[in-house]
Length: 130
Image (cartoon, rainbow, N blue to C red; front, side, top):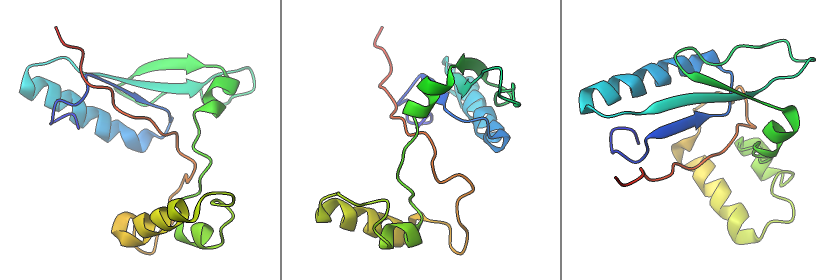
């Protein structure tokens, strides 16, 4: 989405350092396109948290745990979970079918389960017009 000029600020709600490569790529895109793109990492910080570092090459935004928890997507997108209906309970059948179709349609990594099925979900906002 950075290549398509869809956003000028990306906020990642994670401390997964594997995402530092994505942050590096976005910074490279901003240089190539001659425009400003900010990449930030929002994560919970409290007296009880052990990890006090955000993703490398990003601006760190510390937030309280309660705020962070409201950003989590409660749906477990692993196929086995969707098929058991536990994560789609109470959802209309059309939504459940769409989730199953999305997951079964090659959008999951074959043979591997995601390391963190409950990732924060965000949408990119369009760039602000000058």
